[in-house]
Image 1 (cartoon, rainbow, N blue to C red):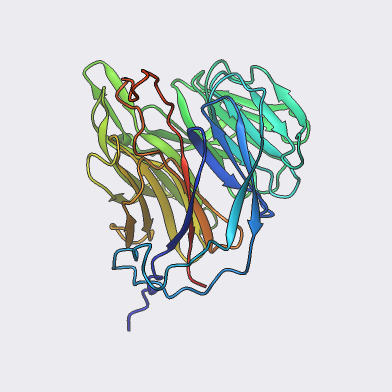
Image 2 (cartoon, rainbow, N blue to C red; image 1 turned 90 degrees about the vertical axis):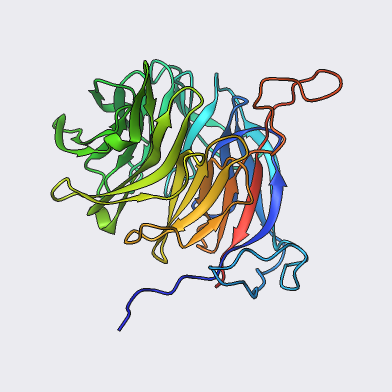
Length: 381
């Protein structure tokens, strides 16, 4: 008897909304009524999620088939959801590359490439900052994470520190100085520890109360010394199976400079620090897994970005080496966010005529900035 769960039908793209800036991270609010994203223009952009009508029950193609073309009979005539732009949250000094929502309070945490950390409201015409640190880190804050109970947040950055903060008032709780640039941090499900990863793919499980690293995991395949350049591939850390499995994702670099490498997902057993499985889920031009989301149906949703014009959305089960669904219709995907209804999700990508070559591409010599289409998808009920 085969107990392997059946793959769901392929998602259908409902609409692509045009953002005016390059987006770096995007998340739905826990209530599902807002979408926010950090951007390269020193702001957090906001949209109101407006239900125009109940989501249609679509006849979707099999997962093994290509997504149906837009003019197919089963394509929706109109998206049941609209993203209505709201005024952005400003006051940052650099790229807002990481954001996270509080699980219950109406708070958004955002950090920029200059080291500023902000806790702010996200509703209304002019959201208010609750607290902020102008220099929470010395330089780029790579990631902000929130504990499941909402009491703590964790940040990490290129200053080699992992810092723990009180979510309510921003007061420092603990810190850990590492030996290398820290790219990612996340809380264990019970919030008692954090896991963090550095330039060389070294991952540590830190009890921040005792300042003790309890376990270490080897993700060094996500690093390469290319001539004199350390190419750091680790971008995502998350827990599965109520904290029994650690997932590390990013890129297995081939060359530095104009980085080439393949997206990869590594699964570790927390109990014995051992690598369970390593899944290479793309070619050497597909680059990095920049973001992961877990669907309760039992699979990971991965957004990848590599060489100019390359970008993929892939669905991968933890016990399989190959994705069971791949979408190649988008360019350079940077984030994937699942709506609280578990049916809809968005992928932020990059406009296909982006000016990545450093040359003007218009007759008047202007150098148009990149922007990020927001692709809205729906899974079947």
